[in-house]
Amino acid sequence: MVEMSVASTAGIAERKRQLVRNELAEAAVALLADQGFEETTVDQIVAAVGMSRRTFSRYFESKEDVVVHLLAGAGAQMCAELRARPGDEPPALALRHAVSVFTSICRVDRERTLRVSRLILDTPALLARFLERQSQWQAEMAGILARRTGLVPDTDLRPALAAGVALTAFQTGLRHWVDNDGTTAIDELVDQAFVMITPALDLSTDQS
Image (cartoon, rainbow, N blue to C red; front, side, top):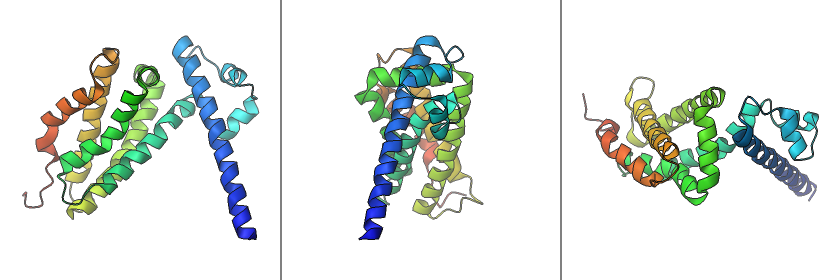
């Protein structure tokens, strides 16, 4: 009973922490989108939600971390989706389903996602953090693809290359979506990109 109570208390505490993180992230995105990245200070962000700078530092190290936080959950879901795809599904189709985690967010919450995506893609410091996070996703996805196909990622370039190409296809579609203010469906853009790259996603083990 004591162990269950401790676990329950820990779970509640973590949920509260997550709520605070989300509140800070939402406030930061609103300010950063309106004022610009360089013009917005941490003090302004915490003032918007009635918190102290000390509280902010318990959750995030910088303004960049606040925005990147919004990507973390979606990236984990993308890798989980790839891991859950049927083993006999072609890699190109499995990867397209995986990145649909992101395209679904764009479709369901269009205005907010446009704002966040434009902020990330047009701010060098945020784009650098996005690409850093994308590199982490690529490594995890490469491991998943290797296990699905029986390839050895330490000696075979194809799993990492396929993961990288798929992520680049998504990012290219996202860039066009943002540049056109979301007037073309994000799924349509990403589908077009995947049609072009499908040959590069062939991980058949009989290739020489």
